[in-house]
Image (cartoon, rainbow, N blue to C red; front, side):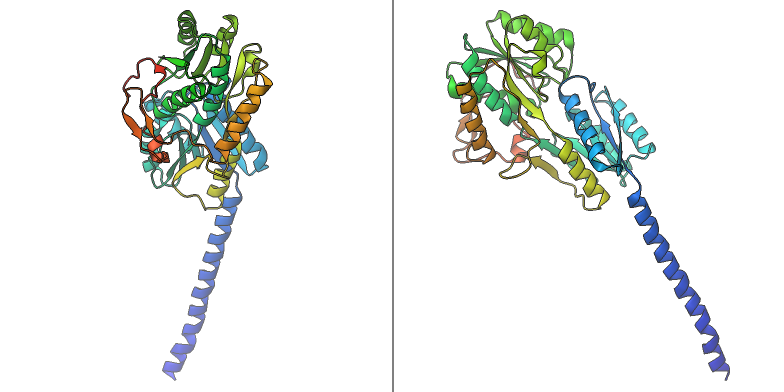
Length: 374
């Protein structure tokens, strides 16, 4: 009887434990669902002002698209004019303290600060632009922004009367070198005599230096000016005031140069930002290098509008080439290809992979100017 009584009295205890366990599991699931239902806070770190009608403007447009399309599921914050230094690390920590669980670091030099902060905060997801080094909670993303520059180069090659093209560039980092090479290849595909004179100002945005660079290029005979600067508010109006043709980058800013505007490249990050935020909310995000531009894939950069200085026949030629690019029937960085010193850089039949594009640090024939070491 004692044994039976002991067995009988143990049943309520086991039942209580089971009930408590069920309650615990239910509360955990409810809590997780509640967390998922809370607005996801997403931060953006920008190296310049969002009023630059260029690189940072494009990211801010993407941020606004993300917030609008999420219908209240996502809240965003943005930090502008943050240097690529220890200051970036401090601002990232502040964003995390404010509850941001996904942060886009939108400038090339933010990788190192983002890596350090990501290591300290494994529960926060980071997305770094234009780099390929990843971590467990840090992915990277970039677009084939050099492709529209090839098409813009075609417009420049047709438009130039002097066969001298100018290019004002920020830093000699691979994405910028790709753009310069691609622009030159496009120009020389329709005008073999065209050459591109490059000036690096070693700053993403410096209005006085940008204006001076445009003027110095004009003095050497360049009558078309392209750029890879974050800020287009100085370069395009300066070109316009000097009667030069201009090519834009990052944002369609034709209104800044109504007479001389040819075309350019413009970024459209909104759909990508929404895709990544959804993945984080759905717990399906994976660390990798996200790339747009493959055959049939999503494209987050496109050709800007044509200016009135581009004849209809030239527009048609460029749009036909654009279709070939989009269908991967034409690949810009494909061998055989040599640099301007005659060294083979891409073997015959080989197409540069993403990792190889990220290491482009050489100029193609037709580019004039010093390529500083990084």
